[in-house]
Length: 229
Image 1 (cartoon, rainbow, N blue to C red):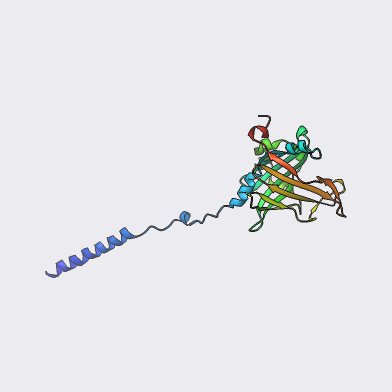
Image 2 (tube, one colour):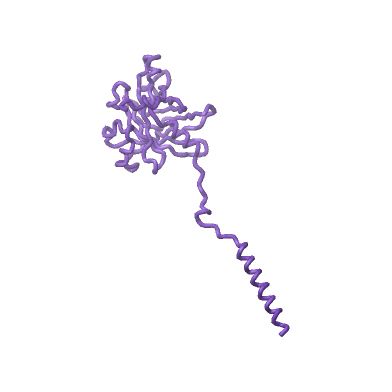
């Protein structure tokens, strides 16, 4: 009969130990909590934002008659599919007749360079003015575009907070006005874009494009960017 209290004591002791272990046990980490979030490319995002908007070279044209007053519009499209911009350029006085319609895709190339990959649009005349309503491009797909091989502009961040770069030398083929190839030099800032496009023949003679330097496209404010509103 004396053994009963001892057995009871051992049993109560074991219950206490098990209870303590259960209370101190940590819950397993869920799969969702274990997911590693990839860091965003802040530099690429900055450039993508700076390139969006409406720009014009009106001030430059007023100061130097060798430059035209050109309007440049760049609107983001297909936000779920990457960093795509619809690009439209025309003489400011006649924007219904564009001289350039493209899609640019910004993509990280390496640690220092971001590529602005250039694409042509099928039936581009159907898209004139659609920078005002970029959702219209939902009926078009990146697969419908045609890449301009060798025409990518490689941009790097600069010490003044902007970005600057160019195409590779002689890689962007062009037959416009007797050219064999074209080059583009681009600088992007928060308030403007400077762009110098030139065409050269097989001997390296310039056959089109500005001769003194690039066009300076000043960024328009919200009211100037869409006069129809």
